[in-house]
Structure formats: structure tokens, C-alpha cells
Amino acid sequence: MADYLNRKIVVIGIDGASFELITPFIQEGKLPNMKHIIDGGVWGSLESSIPAVTFPAWKCYSTSKNPGKLGAFYWTTLDFEKRIIRFHNSKSFKSKEFWDYLGAAGYRIAVINMPSTYPPKEVNGVMIAGEPVSGSQEYTYPKELQKNLVKKYNYDPHIQFNENKDGKFIESIKRFTANRRSGRTKLINEDDFTRLSNLLEKVKEATQSRFDLAKDLISNIDFMHLTLFYVDDAQHYAWDLKEMLLPLWELIDDNIGELITLGGRESNFFIMSDHGFTDLEWVFVINRWLEREGYLIRQQIKKKTSNYGGFRNRLKLLVERVYVHSLSIFKTILKRIANSYLGSTIKGNVQSSLVNKVADFLRMPADNTAVSPRVDSCRDLGKIDMDRTKAIATGEGLIWINSNVQDPERSLLKDELIEKIRDIRRPGDIEPFFDLISKSKDIYWGPYLDKAPDLVVCAKKKNIVWGVPNPAPHEVEWLQEFHWVGYHDPYGIFIASGPDIKSTGSELKGLRIYDLAPTILHMFGLPVPADIDGRVLKEIFREDSDPFQRKVKIKEISEESQRIRNKIAELKRDRRI
Image (cartoon, rainbow, N blue to C red):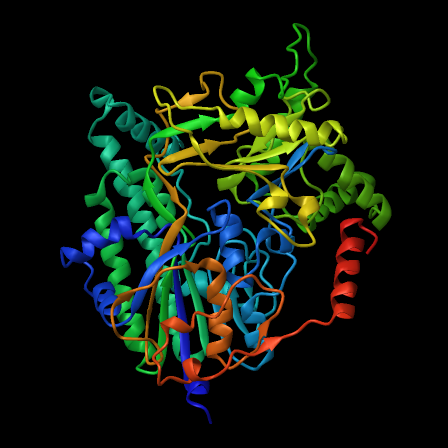
């Protein structure tokens, strides 16, 4: 039996991990385990996806495909026809992940807490879904695993922050962050530091529960992926207070050491992140700019209005508070209401129609999309005149042109926006603000370009393009007072160590998030699909190792198979199957 068949591979994904933060900690001797694996392995910066955000970066890692081949480009997508923002889940991404190939080959896998994996799918092993999900939903495969997670590990897939007396815990954290950013030290008191410390303690508790689960599973698997998602949250709010972040990273370092010991000498370890992290200096509220330029039109406020909108919003809020974000739960509630008031069960077709009508009334998606409370604050487009608006931004730099704008006007509008955005400068600066201003077709490729935003813009390092659809009235185009002090950098971390990995401690260049999936498949002796966007990182291997000496096998996809796949994708897009 080949040696590689006896190897384990463990990937520890730390959301937002950055050499900018951990290198000083390592040099000070505070992260001894990470220093040990860097010195005894290889490392380098890992280029993220575009945009460098949780969604789609984690799925770009697990599929080795750019968003144009996946069908999802951010946490959300804009539906002009239904006038809502839809949140993606695991079903939004149209591709196999590398652990699907591992499972089909008989390898036992465990995937823990990776964002974009809810609802969980069947795997040859276990899957515990990550954000966006709440504890009220079924988030494990097999589903009976969920009760044990809660009982044994006090596991919660979504940290509940709002636990102080006035129920506004996270809001107080945001105020504290904004006061630090603006230098309003007189408004900062000891309670602010206590609340931030409590938040970091919650992140540490969640991190420990993930590691405890991983340590119990590692002896029974061939491959494991573990994501530590809430490190990203901690760094958004405390990036300027490195001493407060250190205990979290010390906990991570201790657990990495324990996991390596449990994995044994025959295990290869990767430590990586979906993106990096750095300081945040300026926030550009792009929808304010689009509004000033006449591309985004707000609805006229009438003096006399009915209570219809207020009732709809109150009902929507009630539904959200009980986490009715799943169609199956929604149907169950409607059935019970019907049985109670009508004395009979609503038939399926009538029930489906009613669900859709109620969902439209609430401006909620009527599909099986699960939504975590953490990402549900920007769904409402009710304040925007969607008939007269020509362009609107969502997320972090995605610009969508209204579906009622057709060519040739549509193409001309794209070019016009690009030229105007090129001229944008932040206050007091003569240098361009953006690193990337592009049409989607120039940075993405694949069968799902029709789902892409029309334009993608990315700010230079230490800045953010903020695309909240309904910015608060006090928010201007340029902000320095913001609820985050740190933000994403397009380059995350990659560290590798193990029996097949070079032990030179050398830095590698040219690493991309797309490269890890084919590298792992190759290490397990499996062919690499021909339609991926990454490459096998042969430069990480020892020259006497099997993965280095063995030729990379490519799994070709015939033209006929590709034609059938594309046709199926087309039919699904048109909702004909």
C-alpha cells in the first residue's frame, strides 16, 4: 500500500488570520506551536477570492472554482424582480467540493463549522454546518449528531451576543469601537472594555468547543477541515487592541499543538485563512454616491400613509425573531394555523401559493434559504424606488444594474459608471481609492455569469466599499467613524507541515485559495478535475515524498458531458427542472 494512503490531512481554517497580526506574536515567543510548524514546514501569503469575503472565499477553497462557476458571488444576491436581497446557503453553490471526491473514494471525512455549508449535505463521515445558521435549525449530518454536540460540547453554531440587561450587547460594542476610532476618549469607560472582553470570551468559548470536537474526531477520519469563524468577528471589533486579541490566539495555538499530537507523525497539517486582516482607515458608502449621482432613487415620503408598511415590517420582524427562515418550518406553522381556524388541512398546491403570497407580503424569500440573525440587517429595499433606480450596490463592492435597463443603454451605463468611479478620491487624497474597477465578465468566468453583479469594485488596502442598501440618514459618503476598526486584506495565511512537506521553513510565493483543493486531492492519490481553477502546489512537498514524485492525474470532462452539464445548469436557471 502506498504511504499516502496511510496519511491524514487536517486543515485548520482560521477566518481572517493574518501574518500582520500573528508574526509579532510568534517573534515574541507567544505562539510556540505555530512557530514550530512554520520553522519545520513551509509558509506563505494566500491570495483570496474576489471579493475577499467569507462568501464566496470558503467555497472557492473547497471547490477550486471562481464564483462564475459556482453561481454565488457574496453572502447575498439582488433580486430586482421580487425587490429583495436573497441570502445564499450551501445549495446556492453549483459544484462538488473536494471532500465529495474523497468520500466517493472511501476516505472518511469531517467538516466542522465551515461557512456556506448550511444546510449540511450527506458526506462519508460528519458535517457540522457553519454560518449562516442558528441553533434552531438542523445543522449536522448525520442529524442525530446535533443533540450530542449540544450535550457534550455546549456547541452552538451561532454565538448569541445580545445578553446584557438592555438586550443591546453588540450595539454597545459598536459604539465603543466607533468612539475609539473617532478619538472620543471621554465617552469610553470601564464598562466598554468589560463588554468587549465578554465578546472575546464568547469567541474563545466557541473556538474551544470546535477544537474539542475536532480532537475527539481526529482518530476516526482520513481528512478533517475545521473552521474557526468567530476570529474574524473578534478582529473586526478589537484589531487595534492587540493585547486583547492575544489570549484568543494563545488558545488557538495551544489547541493546534494538541491536535497535531493527536494526529500523529503520519498527519499532514495545513493552517490557512479565507482572507487576511489589516487596519481600517476609510469607509466609502457607495450607495450614497450612487444616490448623489442620480443612479439610485429613494421613494418619495408621503405625508399621509397607511399602516400597511408598518404592519408588514412588524410582522416581518416577529417572524425573524422566532427564526422562521426555513420554508419547512413556515409550512408547518401555516398548517397548524389552518387546522386551528379552518378545521382542515390546506392542500399542497393551495399551501404553496399561500406561502409565496405571505413571503411576498413580508418581502422574504419563499425558498428553503436559511438565514442567520447575523446577516439579516440589510434585506429590506423598501426605501428605494426600484422602478426608477438604475444601479444599486450590495455587500462590499458589488454593483447591480436594474434588470429593466436593457442594451445598448445597459452597456453604456456600465462604461459610464466605471469612468466616474475611477475619478473617486477619498478626502484630502490625490491617489485613486480603488484597486479594482471591473466588469464581472473580466474577472469571473463560467456558466453562471448571468448571476453575477454587473460591476465589482475593490478599495485599496485599509479601506472598504460599504454597500448597505439603506444607509442610515446620518451616514455620508465617507466615514471614519465606523463600527469596525479592522477589515479584510486580500492575502490570508498558508502554513503546511508534516511528513510529506518540506521542512525548510521557507516562504513560498504565488499561492492562491484555489490551489488547496487540487493539492489535497493529489495527496490522496485522486485525479484533479479538469474544470477547476487551481493547481497542485508541488513546491510544498519534499522531493522524496510520494506526492512530489507522483504525476498529477487530470480527470478530463468530455465535451458531451460538459454540454449536458451546461444544459442542466441552464434548465435549473430557468426553473424548468
